[in-house]
Image (cartoon, rainbow, N blue to C red):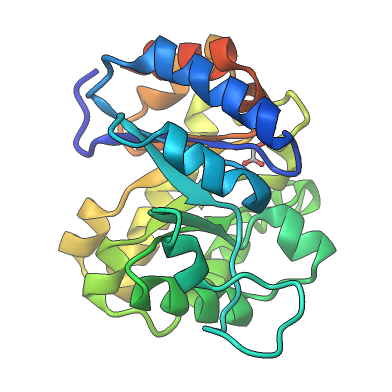
Length: 254
Ligand code: PGA
């Protein structure tokens, strides 16, 4: 597939996998995807498996991501994990503002922006998630929601920092539901996100930033979604928990 930007496909394992299961999964992914150079491949295990998975992916084409981090660098923040701690395990990417955290941990755009700045200061690449709920889409508020989330969650980033950042468009109604956005819906939303980035930063930055789609990506719909010109990759939840499913998504996207 001829793309303007290199595809990036990440598995978000969420709160799944013991260390043993994580190692098993990553072993399968390594075997299936050993020769792939066309796509940046990332796995995002739970914190507890980062140490072992980081050793398992050493000197491979698989990169490591975390699912969240604190906006603080250290101190009295019980239960939190700082960017510097992730760096100890060669983590390169960190998912921020996933809709599950926005919904259940009440994360705000303001907090997500602080986390993004802390990640960038530690040379981690933030994957900032945005996306509308079903009620927003049905009420014609998709663009308003995306504009508000982008302006809030990326507030304070310089143009250089934005280029290091990845945006994930994840319509909440498509996450874990089996009902993916149509390729046209994804393309339209991504084009809108890019337009907003051009307005917030500039055209060059907007053209360089990778915008990936998330929400019920599977081997059967990956090719059509990834072939949309504005779609630069995928953030995969459910289908990333099994080596064949995740690997087939990557292979079908090339
Ligand atoms: P899903 O999750 O692939 O299971 O829909 C996507 C995500 O939450 O990133």
